[in-house]
Length: 163
Image (cartoon, rainbow, N blue to C red):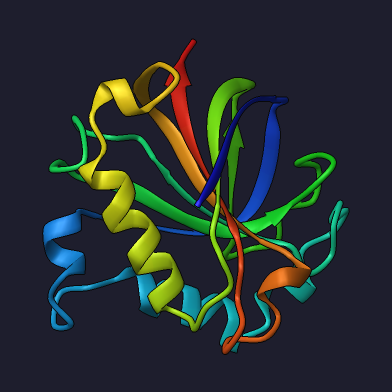
C-alpha cells in the first residue's frame, strides 16, 4: 500500500449509520456493516441526497470510538454534501472535523478482499508505523471511480492521527 500524510478539511456527509465493533464484524451472524452498505446502495439512497459534492463517491466512516480497535464505534456510509439544509427523512448527517490523516492507497483487487486485507495490515501496525498516534476520532474509506469495478477495486483509507 502506498501511504502519505495529509490534512483534510471538514467533510459533511449524509447517509446511514449503525453501532458495531470489530468482534461482531468478524461473525456473519452479527456483522452490520455489509448490511448497512447494502441497504444504502440497494435502495439507491444516494439519489435522495441533495447538494451532493461528488456524485457517486462513497464514504465509509468509522467514528465515535469507545476506545480503540477493540471497542464499539459508529459506522456511517454516505456521500459528501455542501451543507445540511435538506437532509431527507430516514437519512442522517455526519460532520468529520478537519484533521490530519495517514492516507493509505490500496493496490487493485477484488472486493471485499482488497478492503479486508488493507485493514488487517493497518490493525497490525504499531504507533511507530504511523506518522503520529492514532486519534480514534474518525477514519474513513473513500470509494471513487477506482472502485466501480468490484473485480479491480482500489480505494483510499484515511486514518486520523494526532500530528
